[in-house]
Length: 315
Image 1: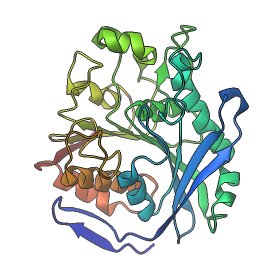
Image 2: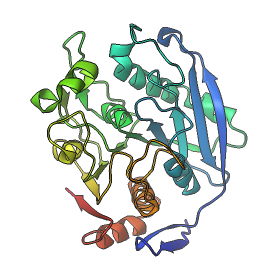
Image 3: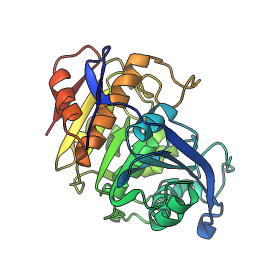
Image 4: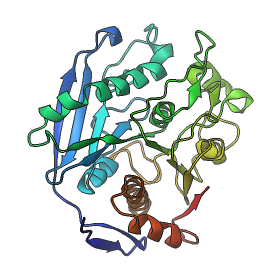
């Protein structure tokens, strides 16, 4: 495979020349036990074959239209990116007493499994995509609440607040994960607010994750969910086993410079250089992991040992 490298001067990182992409939404999947149809968006390169897949889970309250800075970048770099609108989305506006609310976290995992089960159907629904997906190379990614969703698919165990059980809900079809600004372990490190309102964070066990993974954490991501400060979001790296990497984004808050969308009102640390850093490192990782090209990843590891924007380490 020929790779044309473009250098991004602000970061010193390299990446492939972007290709044109197509995006189709909503692809509507029936999901009776969920109580709402599952709406899916697929963004894909217009050229190339044996394309790997990124299954992307949005943060709490977002939807399938979010995260364009990442989704567009990955698709232009050779990946089919699939997004769903999960039940916690503000678009669905479930009432506060909806019985599905305490199980939001597990409905998300079911959404992802349904997408994997129906991947061939989804592929056929996108003009020109049929037969171009490599079903053996699937990576789960997610931001914030979505990072937990991605983690569960590779072995993160969450104690069900209703049953007290911590089941293995991992899916063998997922080879690796990217977790962005994602919750750490629960217990007495949670604030009372998080303990009461986000019961699925009370007890998370990262020790069963052996699949490769990249964790992205902002060193100014001071969430109201933990008493530990920004270091809490590095737990998915420090507490899981196997081949892991951690990108620390210097000055990065919860949206890491604005990954949730272009001109997104919710980001408080709008910074195009930070967004570019996250775009380039995540794409380099995806290409490295799926065996497309190792140059960009090796370059990122070399450049980000001492860099004003961020630090990359592996274990």
